[in-house]
Length: 102
Image (cartoon, rainbow, N blue to C red):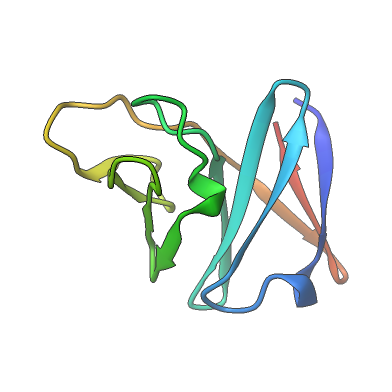
């Protein structure tokens, strides 16, 4: 796994998220009640940009078809069909710098 810099802790306040592109993959980092969580930012359903969706506590709503994901586990909370979990990634904080291992 590679350690990828996302930005500064101060750039991701509570209730907000930030994304980073790693090769062909996009990863989002969300601040849920002061804890940073990272998961793949592309919805399994049809490739919707989860990092452009709405973050509500630990839930991300896909802007394309409304699938609801738990950013802390990568699992689907709601969708009419079964979707595989999105990958989650370890978040590393060094000083004010945020990294993900992907």
